Length: 111
Image (cartoon, rainbow, N blue to C red):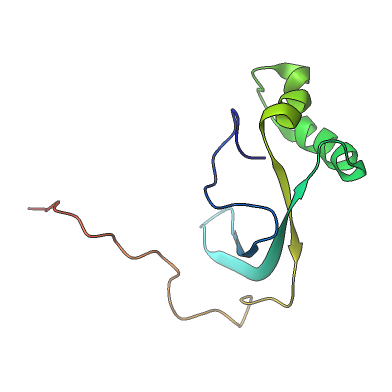
């Protein structure tokens, strides 16, 4: 979920294609990457009724407790990402580039 009191993810909208990269918990290295399609889940849909209770149950320390799903419905957006195809990267098939964003130009200097 994004928006409202939740994190912001500029550019995340319904219907866009994305690349999902899953990292390992221990060292943060890439495990797999795949193409996906973002779909917003409508608050009055059957999918919302199936997904949001599970998200709510896993979310710790909500400032509004049991009212959290209602806040999400009113002020946030819940998205799902549907897999669009085969893995782009995975064991034995990793890109040679690091995947890190280039450092933006800056007047900052170091000693």
